[in-house]
Length: 254
Picture 1 (cartoon, one colour):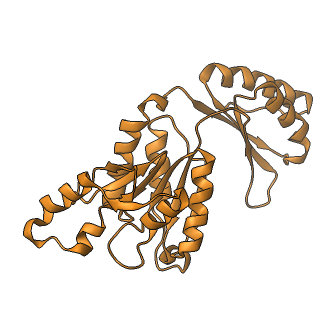
Picture 2 (cartoon, helix red, strand yellow):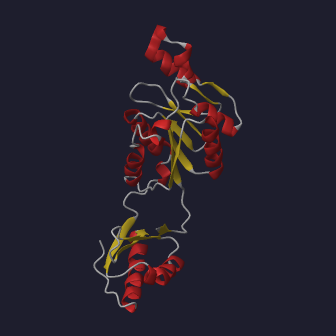
Picture 3 (cartoon, helix red, strand yellow):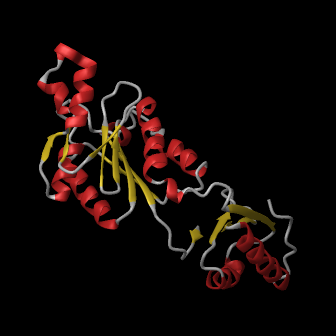
């Protein structure tokens, strides 16, 4: 369990594909995105997994566009009939889909005289889109508003995500400006700690509090605070004082 009332830009990812839901593939994007966000002082707020169902994809994107969140969508932008993410994004926004001139230029540069309508289809994006360069095969992804659509292939997707983070959201980067400190509490459960946690959340709304009981059922709780170094230090003082009042000797923070 974690909680924070701080106002920040939320970042989410949408994973598209039946193979993620039927077990034929295991997702690798979530861990990769978390790693790339963390190196820039950012965090992932949510994840959605959607099968190759145009109705569900459109509904999901309608909701996420309305949220104002920064969103990375993986998969469904190829040339096969089941690749419908571009069309669903356009429908969610109520705009047409059209061949993007910059994407077309890249496709023609790759395929020369072997360009086909099917290959050009990979450059058809919702009107108003910006392209995301693909350093592997030059078949672009696209951005529209704060949503960014990249292929499902990790070798292409991950550098494209990095490009977006560094070119569109550099102003949000805050490496080394947020830290996390955790207390590993023995011989207790989370129940007696709830009033203290509520006090911490009320007094330090800019910090993120996390409480993780032991998964094996033992009496052990990880209690953590995340935020700027100065505020985490202040919060830890209050947290440790509160633990002492509960008869719990706080260990050194890790």
